[in-house]
Amino acid sequence: MRRVLTADAVNMAIESREADMTARLRIMADRIGNSIFMQDTTEGTYAADLMLLSSVFDSRIIAADSELKIVYDSYDNDTGHYLISDAAVKAIKDGAVSGYDEELGLIEIAIPVTAYDSDLEAEITEGVLLAAASPEKVLREVDEKERRALIIEILAIVILTGVAAAVAAVVVRPFDKVTGAIRSAASFDDSTPAVSDYKETEEIVDAFNEMRTQMKALDQSRQEFVGNVSHELKTPMASIKVLADSINMQPDAPVEVYRDFMKDISEEIDRENNIISDLLALVKMDKGVGALNIENRNINMLLENIIRRLGPLAKKNEVDIVFESIRQVDADVDETKISSAFMNLIENGIKYNKKPGWVRVKLDADHRFFTVTVSDSGMGIPEEALPHIFERFYRVDKSHSREIGGTGLGLAITRRTILLHRGSVKAESVLGEGTVFTVRIPVGYIA
Ligand code: ADP
Image 1 (cartoon, rainbow, N blue to C red):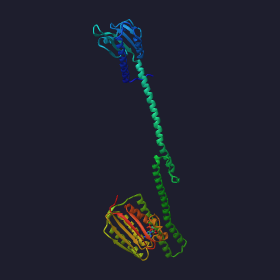
Image 2 (cartoon, rainbow, N blue to C red):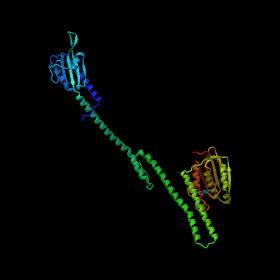
Image 3 (cartoon, rainbow, N blue to C red):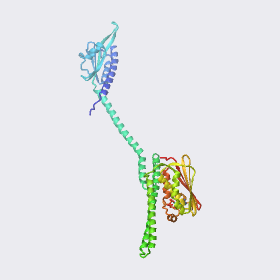
Image 4 (cartoon, protein in one colour):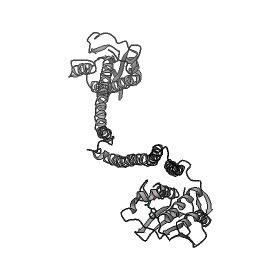
């Protein structure tokens, strides 16, 4: 199939062939000019040289004398005839002519053959060398070159595509492996973490394993929490059931016994309510729902109010509350939430105390933080229990805490509230002597 060659490529090829032929023909014209070839074509090797040139350039070469009589024709057709060629005439008159005759479809070059006449002391024109070549061969060569270039292009594309695919496969392989490993380690049931055989993916795998460990811990604590919640909610229900059943079993029991049982049932219902309220408060804070409603408040007044509200309970427990305010403190807090946090700490100080006992609340501040210390003269917390008291449903003495109406959620809520205020809380205790809770909160809320 013949392809369409680009015009530029064809023109360039023809021009270069023209220049080449002109140069070779000029050399021949110079040599012939200094010989008697025009008179005797058997002279020297000129005829053989012209024939060689004719075959090299795939062209017809004609030599004619100054009268345009053909003395040599490489095709041997017209020797002896007169040369009819505008180019030849022009060459004899004006010098070398070359060009592509589009009409004839021929590259034509005419070079005058001149010699120095010592008698006349001038250059005289002895004849002309005319070369006519069809560009067919040139076109074939260009075509061939382009075909070769195309093949090389196609080969290059095929090879490059292959190389690119191979490189991509090598690059992607570690990621494929990681995806596989992550999938197989995604379930918590399987205790083996994801592993990486490749350096490139090591960090991804490490990050994934870290996240996996955290999620596993989270899942475990969620399961424990659900278990604890169910248990805690069932306990008051079980008591209510037992109380109700025992009344039913004594249809003739006196009214006083009924009243007693109903009072116990009512207390159990209150307990259930407290647990549910605390749970809802915790869940809300965990979800960040209704995050803090921050306002600048006087902390001295806030603590005084809490202490006043706890007065009756303190009196009942024979506990003396002392408020020691080192300075006036205004701080950005969520009044309701932080009040219940401090209330819980002071209430615990009263509840887990001796009779008689004391609770001391101290407020101090520097320019960045305010500190509230709640100390009591109570029963203290055993060393091994201390790290757990902020956990949900953790109680040192379940029956005692139950007896005094604790849900085991108070300190968990307190800690969460303080953390939401970007603060910290710590507990120190000596068993049998008392406990100190220290709360530190930034004066200005850090959003
Ligand atoms: P509760 O509702 O049982 O009081 P909390 O979360 O407030 O739950 O407290 C958890 C546990 O920590 C309590 O059950 C109690 O054993 C212990 N505790 C808390 N505060 C004190 C304190 N001031 N003195 C001694 N023990 C305390």
